[in-house]
Image (cartoon, rainbow, N blue to C red):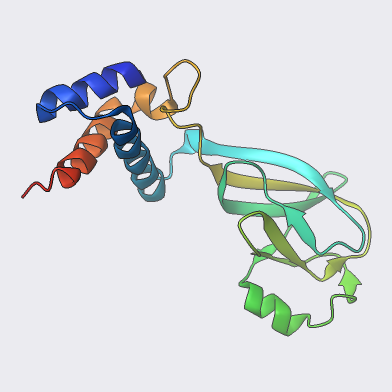
Length: 169
């Protein structure tokens, strides 16, 4: 189901004509609920990057929702870091000048991981994560993973949001 079909279905089933902004809102809310509820294997990604000597922060990939794992790659070996709360890292490593091979990571803000101890060298790393794909409302061709593979869930979710908007019982 593409976005044009989805909008027509919501308008037809609700027997109401919603604005494009309202339909986009219903759809985005439905997508967010689906992605927050269901972990779909097709929405996993791996990305490699570099840790920089002396930099305790690592930028998250675009579309990042949450991490499955973060590892340092040393030759053919993977050294998996342990996911901890940032408070644990601050308590265990209060001095950012303490360096070594990172053992822990935490979500620091919406764009960065916090590593501990601070990397003592440049390392290659790999993050395995769940990402938020482009919304069907913003895709160039009006399609999305949910529209192609879970069209009933997307339609139902959009209808629930529309029904709530209409102050249904």
